[in-house]
Image (cartoon, rainbow, N blue to C red):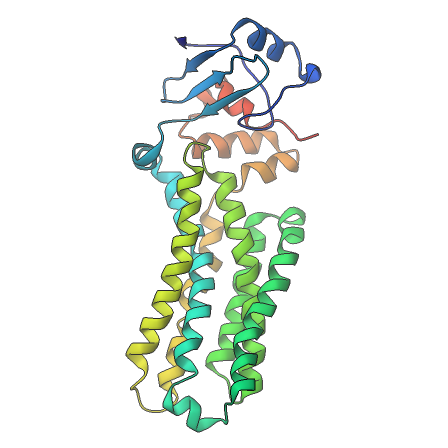
Length: 300
C-alpha cells in the first residue's frame, strides 16, 4: 500500500532498525497503525514501514544515476572529499618508478634493504595515521581532521621532493604515509556521513576509484618524467603530490560539516540546516519533513 502527502513526524537513529517501546508515542502510533505501507514525499523520497511493525527504511530521493544527477551538490562534495583517496593511491604508485630511475640510482646506493624501507615507511606511517584519525575526527571535527592530515601529507611530500639523502626520503615517506593513512579513514567517514542513504553505496565506491586512479597517475607521471635529465626526473613526480594535498587542505573548509558530527555535539539546528542542504530541502521543508527528523536523533 502506498500513501502520498503529509504524515506525522518520526524520530530514529538510522535508516532501518528495531524500535524500542521507549522511543515515544509517535513511533507506536505510526508503526502500529500503518504496517506494510510506503509513504512518499514530494522530492521523490519514501518512508517504508515494514510488515512487522517494528522496523522501517527510508530514502531522500531516487536511486541510481537519476539520484546522482538530481543531488549534484552531495555528489560533488563526495567527489571532492575523495581526493584523500587519490593522494593515497598516488603516494603508493609514484615510488615504483622513482626507485628505478637512472639519476636516483646513480645518486645514492639503493639496495634491496633501502628499497624495502622506502616502500614500507609509507605503509607503517599510514597504519598509525589511520589508527589515530578517529580520535581527532570525534574530538575536533571531520573537516579539521582532514585539514590536519592534508598538512601532514604536504609536509611529507616536501621532504620527499627536496630530499638530500635517503634518510630524508624515508622520513618523508613515513610522515606522508601518516597523512594519507589518516585521509584513507577520514575521507570515507566524511563521505558516508554526508551521503543520502539511497546513494551511499554508489558514492563510497568513488573512494576506491580515486585510490586506483591515484596509483595509475603515479605510474604514468613517473613514466613521462623518467628521461628528464638530473634529479628532476624523480623530484617532479614526488613534488606533484602537493597538488591534491593543497586542494584538499584549502577546499575542505568549503565543504559542509558532517551532520552526524553536529548531532553528536548537540548542535541540532546546525545539523538540520546542513542536512537540509545536502538533501535538497529548504529550511521550511526541513521543519516538517519527517525524513530529516528520522536522521538527527542523538544516539543513546
